[in-house]
Amino acid sequence: METNKVRISSCIATRRLDPIFYRCGISRFGKVFKLTRVGLVVSSMQSGFAAGKENQATAKDGVIQVRPTNIDTEGELIFDKNVYVPADANRPMLMKEDIVFNNTNSQELVGKSAMIRENKSLFFSNHITRIRVNKSMIIPDYLCIILNIYQREKIFFSICTNWNNQSGVNIELLKSVEIPLPPLLTQQKIVDIYNKAKREKQEKEKESQRLLDEIDTYLLAQLGIELPKEEQRELTFKVKVSALIGARYNPFSYSAKTAMLQELITSSPIKKKRVNEMLVLSSAGDWGIDEDEADSNDFVRCLVIRSTEFDNQYNLNLDSSRVKYRMVKRDKLEKMDLQEGDILVEKSGGSEDQPVGRVALLTSDVLQESTLGYSNFIHKIRLDKAQVNPEYAFYFLRTMYRIGMTESMQSQTNGIRNLSMSSFLNQHLLLPDNQENINEQINHKYAQARKNQEQAKRIILEAKEQIERIILS
Image (tube, rainbow, N blue to C red; front, side):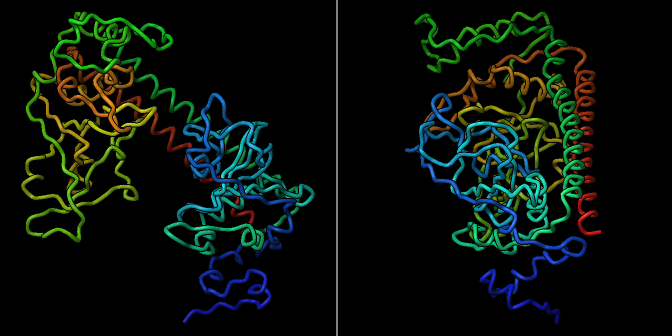
């Protein structure tokens, strides 16, 4: 039996007697540099405040409240989806060089941290601990790097307390955590290594995004479609009553933008057909039931594709940590009949800033992942390969979604956006003669973008390994 020796003084300081706590692996970080408690190198620690919907504000009259969702897994702040609280709230705020530590999350994510790098008005939630350091002892960036190393090495996973599917590291526990404390010059060397790698990573990601952004522009150019400059969205517009008879009452369907996009497609000299004219098979999905509820003779265990698996940059993302396996009736799965070239359409879901109607293509490598199904929020279509290349159809439909055409085909009820499948299937699809060549060019751009993203990941990974070698020798 493997045993660990623990000082009684450590038990008293941490107030912990559980053995897992002392097997978290902190001791190996003290082989080169002396370990020092976090509480001895900080000047203050403070948790933020809760803000329910009734206490929130809008982007126009509020200030962002930093929450765990604003911290990515690389230790950077992201502000793509924000919660705002009133600007006049008499609450503690963040300032430049503060560290934000995620004190409550799932056990896998608790402890992720980021540093505030600019002077910006920001509040922080009760799931965030604000850390201000004693700069004569430790560089803020260095502490942030160490906290994220500990998070990746599952140290916070081991020492956190758990309740109601949540895990936490409170201020007293965080103060007791020991970290390696090299001289300030060595700390700065570590910070420089990491920041250099971050800059190089960002350049690679920037180039990758440029390639991805070019795809829609390239496809539209191949189709001879030139979009006008984006103008402010119309708040009101006039529609003839005759246009509404027997039609949908969704205002997007009658906007000038929608009319302009439809005109660009219908007036194109390129051959065109409606999607439903090329339709071979159309099938709804099924969410299935839990594994423990199913009779194995009548059901099949399969990976059920949801909207969550639709990747906004590429295609489907069937990451094993996110997917859901369900039991689907055997006869229903046979009716789904998923084949290479089938297109999945998101018919329900979306969000405030993401319209419903995204598409995904079933490729040979996706079909090899597992036995696949798709949820009742997804619809499958199969197009006649003699009339259209399925991969080209996927790229065309996705570009139509991105330029806003698909948004005119949806409605919204109870916060959920729903796609009108009849409108979706009734849209025109342009059919140029060079569909395969278009696919090749787009796939080349995707390959280059992926290559840059992989290089970006490798750059930051090598920097982390170099830093750990300095600390651990």
